[in-house]
Each structure stands twice: as C-alpha cells, then as structure tokens.
Length: 433
Image 1 (cartoon, rainbow, N blue to C red):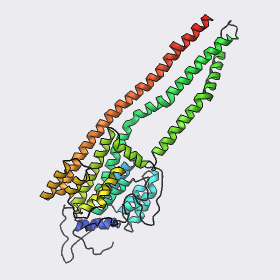
Image 2: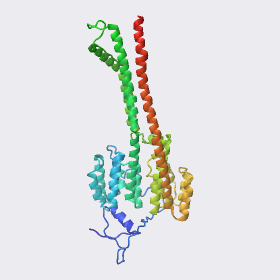
Image 3: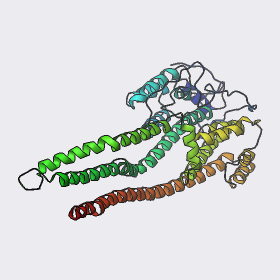
Image 4: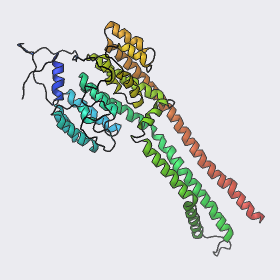
C-alpha cells in the first residue's frame, strides 16, 4: 500500500495515471476536503497544448510504426486476427474490472498463444515502471500491427484504454470472420493447381498406353491382347515419362513461382503495395475506405470527448486506421496543423470524407456536442462498412462459384477431348492401316 498526491482535474485522470504505473486506486480525495468526492460518470478532461507544425510527438513512441528510443524491434511468428481477438478481449475485461495491469498482463500471458507470451511478460514488467502499453506493443510489429498500437496509444492518452482494447478485439473479430468467407479459394486453387494438371498428365499417359498396346499387340497367350499387368506397367512407364518431361518441370516452376509470389506479397516489404491495391480494388476498395473512416471517426469521437485538441485528436485518430496508405494521407494533413483549426475545416479540406461529414461536424461544434457528432459519423461509417463488406462477400462468392465452374469445365473438356476426339481417331486410324 502506498499513498501520495497528484495534480489532476478529477478522479478519473488520477485512476488512469495510476493504472499506467501499475497501481490500483483504492481511495481518492481532494486536498483539504474531509470526505472523498462523489464519483461522476463524466469522462476525464485532459488538457492539451496546441501542437506546432512538424513538432516531435510528446508521446514516447514517436508514432505507432516506430519503436521507442533505444528499444530493439523484435520479430516473431505472425499473429492472427483470431488470436488478437481472444487476447484483447481478455485484456479489456481485466482492465475494466480494475485489475492491476502488471498482474493482468502476467496472468493472461500464461494462457495466450505462444508467440504473444513474451510481449505480455515484458508489458507486465514495464507496467511497474510506468511504461505505456503501446510502447511495448510497438516493439513487436509481427504481433501488433501499426493500427493496433495506434488505437491503444489513443486510449492511453485520452483515458479510454479498456474501450480501446475492446475496439481492437472487435476489429480483429470482423477481419477474421471476413477472411474465413474466402474458403472457396481453396477449391479453385485445388482445381487449378492440382486437378487440371493431374487430369492432363493422366489423359496423356492413358493415350500413350493405348499407343504402346497398339504397337506391340501384346505378348500374352490371348493373341494380340495385353494382360492387365502389362497394361499397368506400360501406363506407369508412360506416366513417369510424361511427369519427368515436360509436365513435371513445368509444374515445379509454376508452383515455385506461386509460392515465391505468395511469400513476398504477404510480407511486410509488400505491405504498402498490398494496402494500395486494397483501396483501389473493385468492390473491396469501398469496404476498406469505409472501414478506415469508421475507425478514424470512432477514435476522434473518444479523443474529443476527453478534451483533446482537434489537432492532437486528428493525429491520434490517423494512427489508428488499418490501411497505411489512408493513414499516411491523414498524417500528412496532421503534420501541417497549427492546433487551432476547427474540426469541420479539417474534414472538409482533407477530401477524404463524404461531403455530408463536414456540415455534421460543424453542427456539432456549433451546438457544443462535437463528440456526439463524431459518434454519429462513426455509426454511419460503420453501417456503410458493414454494407460494403456484405456486398463484397456476395460478389466474392459469385466469383468463387464462377472460378470453380470454369476450372471444372476445363477438366471435363480435357477428358471429353481425349476420350471422344483423340481416342476414336487413334482407333479409326488403326482400322485404316
């Protein structure tokens, strides 16, 4: 048990500051007051100074994509959205229940996925020193992407960390469920990479076996007939010859090229190109844009509710969007802010938002309910995101059905051509001779 004094606007700020230091608040009262103050549901107010253009961030990490000074970036096995969903759901529940952060991270590390264990243990140790959670997460980019660090950082600075952790869990769950929809890709891949080449090699081998039988006439007692054992041996011989050249090497080259491309395209090196394509790709581009708008507006509303200046709130919200191309555009606007601009002017000048957003934000500023207006924008963007995602699922499902139909039709066409065009021609040629 420890006690001390802290200069703060209300009890909420005190509680948040102590939780960052790994302490759990038991009792709080104002200096000179005889009784503890009554708790209020109002959010804490964080005083912010205007941010000068191109000034360094006051936050220790210097941005979600950067690691803290003198800290080594640690690369691990990639974390999945499913794993992040379970992890951040537990973290949010633990902090919302008032459990000491250091204890919460240590306990959850013992039942989390193996690649997350080290980062959580480090977070538990750093929490006792007052190091923010986002600083620790930034050291593990393979486990916690930039937007995850950005949301956590905004939650720490504006005093809504448990809610921010819940938002990360929600994002991960939505991404996981969307990716699972693409199960049909495996059917198309199997048809294209296995069934079609396999059908081609087998039909070539069977036709080659017929040629071998036709030439030898068989050596068995049947008089011009080949025994099943001999036919099987000839088939395997032709199959082996066709596999060795040319179809075997061709298949190896094609498979190797696909594997190299897949490894490169899913790596961090190609992340910018991948996100650029995600914004421009038909159907999926609308989903990505609305997802970024929804996350940006949500973080802005929470930061504004905490009293963060528009310029600082803009920077925090920009760091929380998943797409790095969209984030860089928002960050470019944020670096030129003086700290005194109106939020509606920022929304209008950015040209990244629908035209209806700026008047709605202006009304919120006029009525003194900016956070409420941003909340409505977040809800609208979330609705557009859900609609775009459902449309993308329908369209992708149609593409998957079409892909399975085309690849299956190719296999049937190969079989039909071999058995009803080539084989009859060989038989009739034998009669002519």
